[in-house]
Amino acid sequence: MLARRLWHLLEPVHAVVYYAPEVVAETTALGYDPAVRWPAYFPLRAAPLGAPGPRAVAAAFYSFEPGMVRRHTERAWDTAAPDRVLAARLRGIDALYRRLLGPALGGADLAAAAALARRAAEAAPLAGRPLAAANADLPWPDEPHLVLWQAATVLREQRGDGHVAALLAAGLDPVEALVSFAAVGAAPVEVFASRGWSEDEWAAAADRLRARGLLDASGAATDAGRALRDEVERRTDELAEPAYTALGADADRLADLLGPVWVAAVGSGLLPAENTLGIGKI
Image 1 (spheres, one colour):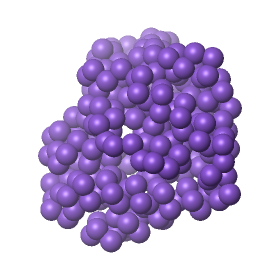
Image 2: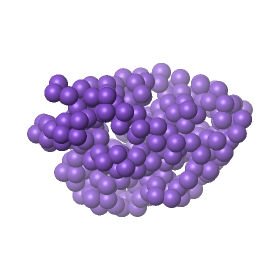
Image 3: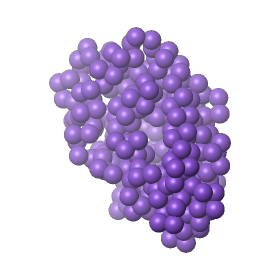
Image 4: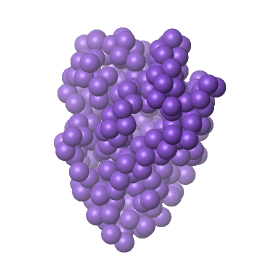
């Protein structure tokens, strides 16, 4: 499906913001602890929403354990106001892509990719998608590499908001969503530990899924479990598709133009080889 293909290309373009040393330098200057990822991650991603409290962040991000979210967000906006966080993330991503792209930064292909990605982002349905809508409300930058990054951000959050809707429709609560995803081999269980759920919470979720016939005794997905996860991914793609079908034949051109930027993002070595999104596995 077109939405899946372009998500695989656009996700790394966006996701480097959470790992780039240039962004870490900016958030450290704001006062966030750089020793671990999360004190900066939550405000970087939540700042477009204004200054949301822990419950709002946990609800929007869905898969994180609420206590973990609270620990990292209850004083986040005392450290830096959302407008300062937004300015810092844009400065950081600007510096990163200037380093990664070098001479290609001012090229016609990058400008074309940015224009097409922006068209897709502006065509993406936003109803019921708070993270996407909040990012779509931000002013567009002038430079093509920043337009491309912001468009990638709107599109990945739009997909993510739709994914939450698909999980809710499937009756999978936040921890069950992770357990069921690990059970189909999207990533090792250890990778999902980053979401903050305890071993007891994980085991209880697995028991609930077994009671529904979705996991077997070993913790692997049953045929029914795989079918349910396939339906979640199918519905997620379907909900994301309108943004890309709006491009018509230009969708294939966007995919081609994204290649060098994707290579730069993935080739940077900043992104983890295993991820909780299942990229490369689903």
